[in-house]
Image (cartoon, rainbow, N blue to C red; front, side, top):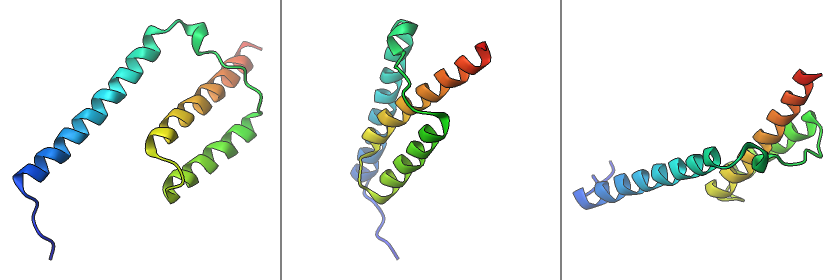
Length: 92
């Protein structure tokens, strides 16, 4: 049986969750506020290479080789590149 957490411990955990959520909201707001072309990154990989890179990234975060914050940043970059590839193919 595990020991129950103290009120202070619970409060600290809740505060950490709120801080993480607030930071995530700020990152999203910053992305929305930036001009659309500023987010454009030159896509140098194929769709299958990007998907493989995403799989590798997931493995790295699950094994603890990279932090969750690093994961989220790189994940967003790869997803935007995939989105750009999709936008290009729908324009053709």
